Image (cartoon, rainbow, N blue to C red; front, side):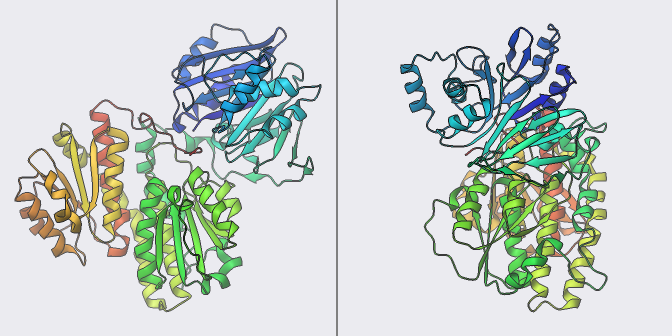
Length: 607
């Protein structure tokens, strides 16, 4: 969600903050702003709109001070106006606050502060933080911040500066990510490592209820009881070039084209020469995994659909019963916990708010927890008992692509790992793993034929509704295809199990409602053909995703997109790529920016 940048040091050029904020545009936002401490006092520039608009405004200034705060806001309380943009200030114009999260009790706090004479100028929940700090300030900014956040209910990642103590930034965290780093360039605070990786790969991730005091020369981290903590730096395993477009028009296309590499990176070093799987992040809990009798996978959005594929994989390959749930709903359920039940949390960012809340709920029950995350050092990675990193590199495009195929690859490894602990024979595991290693080349061949998919998009770009359908392993793939089209082209799309057509969705079918069907050579091929014919009988336009060499399928469709043959258990990794490309080209043809879909954020850090 909101992007936070704080800097204190000698590089007193506002372009540093703008560059950092630009690298957070993928998170989604609708306004931007900055504050800086100059010799004359606290100065600020805020805009409704894009970071480039803020950059243009700053060109009209000659700011040279430090520290600085920069912020991109995704609106919650109050619309995307200049007044509601961050930073927010106290009555005296001495304190500036930037904030990611939601303060649930801000209305009561605001009413009390107004009674005490405080004047508010925005509709935001954030502004109450600045006024509380003003109220509590008595010569110690750290203590004023501590007293202020003790009154807050909800989520916050925040950074604070004050003209009273202009040599520091105070940062604090509760259920919203904050990282800090200090090096020869100065002291940095951010809501996302991507913003400051240009200056440092070594970062400290704050935990809930921790406060950081950051100066040009160093930092201190304290817990809620004011104990100074010794925390290890985490090295971020990707560089700035990986977070740039590298000549592509959009990050989404770059990241789709990176999938052969990201799949390779996800499985590299994890497949042994003799047909086994080695997952170092699970070594310490291998005995607990051996005794698992049930696994529950929790995730949101695209990661949820990957988890649905994971259910099929793990049940079929390892024999362990698997439940898949939406993390956003899980903690509102009253369900029994099995003694030998483990929980797997899947998240690209490792910071998804609902998934973290579900993790916290599970940890209260002292159950075994696992994670599959892409961002090293993220909250889910730190809080689970064991897990696996994607190593897919930064994913900037809001619509997830390479993270999804990476997650599927790792879920396959996990399924084989768990299977080998049980009844899966070495020849069976070797067969799956050998085919898994062939997927990067097969994905590459699909990407090489992307112009064919672009032609299909040009043919169908004026339709307003789509149905995506598949069965078994590719039922979740169909749901992901529909989600991609909705996310970036704003076309209404439904993802369904083809088996459910006669239970309602077929009522929608007519000549203006195309269907995209996953009809691969598999155990459900005949069933899919029957569903395809049901739709064609009702004059529904039909695009079929088929296996290369399937000549008969052309008799059952208006358009065919072919993908290479693979094992059914691995087919979603290939099947999803044409869906990604189709959604991308539909968006571009309609004049939309696929990297920045309206109303969406890459990382959902508030509920």
